[in-house]
Amino acid sequence: MVRKWSVPYPAVNGEEERAAYLYLPVDYDREPDRRYPVLYMFDGQNVFWDSDATYGKSWGMERFLDENRVPLIVAALECNTGEHYERLDEYSPYRFEEKELGRFEGHGDDTMGWFIQEFKAFVDSECRTLPDREHTFIAGSSMGGLMSLYALFKYNDVYSRAAALSPSIWVAPDKLKALVTRAKIQPDTILYMDYGSEEMGNHKTMRRDFGSFGTKVMNRGVHLTQRIVPGGTHSEASWERQLPFVMETLFYGLDV
Image (cartoon, rainbow, N blue to C red; front, side, top):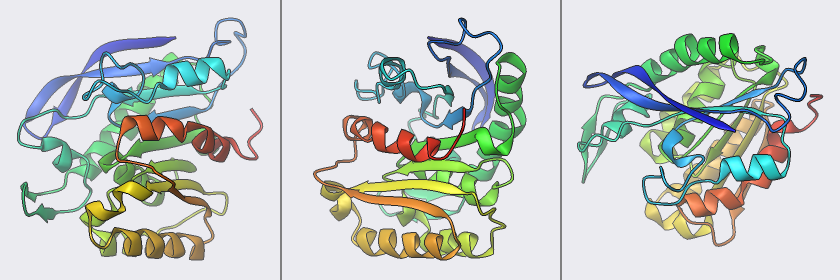
């Protein structure tokens, strides 16, 4: 079951209403004493339903979780859909410039502040969550994947596990690696990270940056699952097909 409602969000252009989504497991009402891990996700409009998805295709997350009876709460927030690519600003923790799109200041840390202080607090108060770090995950794709990496390493005291699909490492690969180098990482940290073989050419240094970033992560002792998806593309349809790998990694060794 997915609940959808509207929340006030402090966007880069001023406060605006955003769609929020909350998935509850199929057994949630049948087991009133049970508590669940929570997965926080970016680009919420693309997570559950094709009817809400930006390009008409979602991850199909509700269907996957229901069919496999995954004991997981999922909380997702709609991204900034502004016509001036404000999403790139809200979903980047670093200043960067894209030749065809312009310069972005990078308000990703503000975004994470809202996710932790407002969104997580609300979900924990309204649902039967396991609110501790061990059972708090985060995931996203593209710029949302970049944000998931940033969240895992900058806020490792909040998130123990993350999934970053087709992460936009190209935004600031050196700054991201510097973050991994200096981050205080707990030894049970788990990361799933992939990139589609068909999208490697979208940025000329992507293959090198993806590989070197994975090496940096492993050198910090993180339990990493890193894949190049054969035939994978930069699309919700491709990311949906990776859900079995994502869930296997997020739940590995976890007793829920």
